[in-house]
Image 1 (spheres, one colour):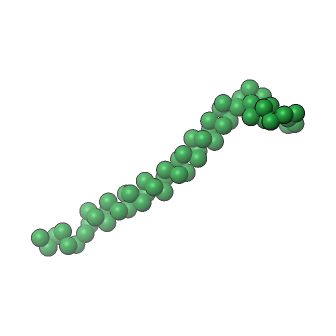
Image 2: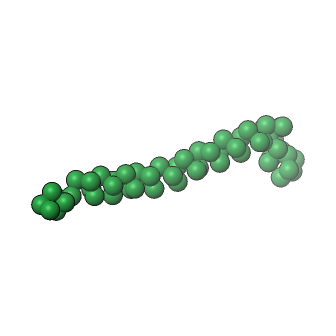
Image 3: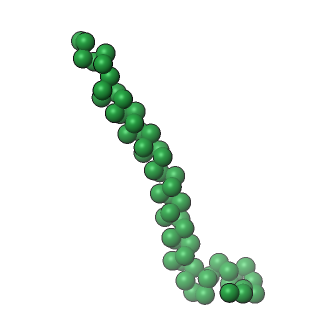
Length: 55
């Protein structure tokens, strides 16, 4: 596709909302997944801490 202006590029032939919305959702998922995985990992380590069993 050829776009004659930046506005035409961002509009994506009338589908810009869907295209850029999809990119935004994917970007949020890619940022959130490592953060949530690290949180789950820390919680798993805390829950299986052997020092807690000694008390």
